[in-house]
Length: 217
Ligand code: NYM
Ligand code: MG
Image 1 (tube, rainbow, N blue to C red):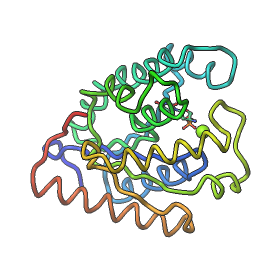
Image 2: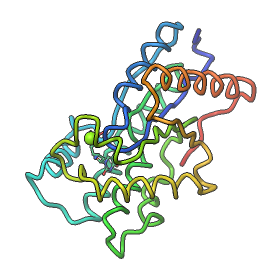
Image 3: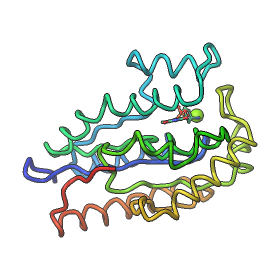
């Protein structure tokens, strides 16, 4: 049970479109609340802010943006939430977040714009609150597509999803992203749910044992 002297956790879900992030993050929120924790569920992009509305219009194909510009808008959309994330965690609330800077890096780099590398894409994210654990729900683009097919937003097509997955795997192997844990998201939802909860409980124990404070990206 959280007390004010006990900081919240920062848990992020990542993965391809249709990897099950919405389902699994909602289940984790419910499970943690059942255990008596204070939890806030957020997602990026946060389409409710003025910057988020620009992103929404771009994703729906209603407006165009230069590749670097949209990348920086996605990043700015995280920065505008950064203070409230840190504040909540310090006051004992756990944040469960659908997508974060990892998506920011890989979706932009997957466009194969020669001046927008994975390394370039990560720079504006430096200094953001760093997740205690990033749960990468790994699924093949083929299996993801079988789940009722992709939607109609920008990026939701198989060539792009294949490059996104390769870049997630590249990011995972980087020493900078040591909070990345891969979960096989092709398993039944109940199995994924259990694995996710186990990983989060272990993360909680390790944070408590070391009294680790929230780090920065
Ligand atoms: N996306 C998401 C990015 O391109 N950069 C980012 O920084 C973030 C957070 O937005 N296809 C992309 C990935 C998704 C799309 O997200 C919308 P969602 O979770 O499908 O609503
Ligand atoms: Mg999507």
